Length: 452
Image 1 (tube, rainbow, N blue to C red):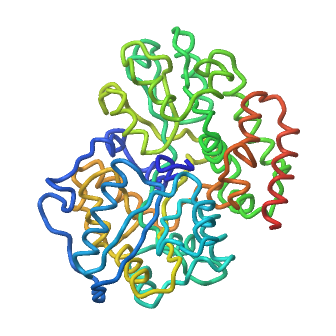
Image 2: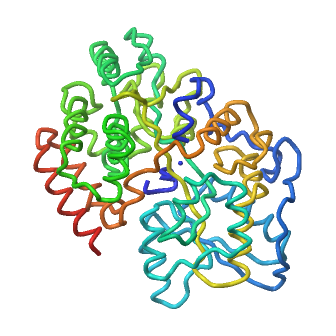
Image 3: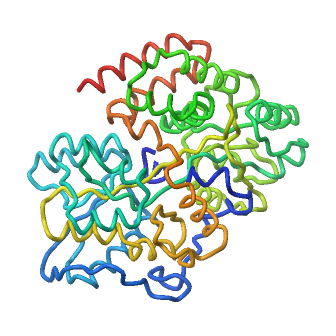
């Protein structure tokens, strides 16, 4: 998002298995009386934590607003069980820069919630991140599929605990716009473009794109690329084992240009998209539900909160369908936030152990707006059937998902405003005919970033 909305900050494996009704989900808030419990039941105690009375712990994350409030409830339960005192410090969107400045000043936070795999690995490579201890390792092996554990590891050593996951393969649509145009939920990219044209022909711009925030454009590319090129190529590009000048990238950008380069399909045109922030892209689709500026908007499950902020009703004014299949299968892309210890201390390791347990996930699950990859979390912790369905599908997917590609890249390439992939794709949105030029720029920026 790289912001709390994004995570990026994110679930994709659930998409292909869910009904539309099941995806009408997270925004409702759906919490219990105080958010600490689900359905009135207290969080379970499945993991033993040490006494930390008198010890202080500082935790940082990008989360603000409701996300911060719900995470604070998790931290308060940790305080209750251990006697530690925990403070929360918002990092802002650039976690790498925030932590780097704190380490340079000799006062890093104890634990950081990192939303990008590339940043997690950067922290490990620099020695900022500390390996998890045996207790956390045991919880991870017990509660998480290997795919999620691997995302939190670097060179065979475990550093991160993926506490929060998100689904980044959804298209949200205004039901009034679709009904007026006679449009239907598409299953393929070809049909997606056809339905978009129907909406445009009816007098409403088809798709709102938040191109001012470069991370939204990386999500567009990743969904197209994964479905079209397949998981093996996706992994190779994510690790820069193939170049961005590869024909598979040419094909994906050319496919995106079918949408971005067609007059009348983007709300406000390409220039309008480039000057639209992500929250505004949702508002354009749902703030005036009866006469919207756009018929659809693409992004993850966190869009539901923005839909509610716009005053629209989920499963009424707003519905959602899985990102259409560009190739043989619909894409399944996830995001997530991993807890990483930045200090070697008993307290920081105990917090990681707690976050790897179902106990911690139970608390936020009950408050709503949260999906966990923890397979030991009782699904009854979620406050409604749609969330339970999403969580069940994610867990059932096991290792069959792919994590956000830009979040796996070095931050200088995949996670910085006005540079790297974010800037290159913004320039591509400005001129979708320049496929070759953008590929060369992407490759030059990637080569530099992955070399460092």
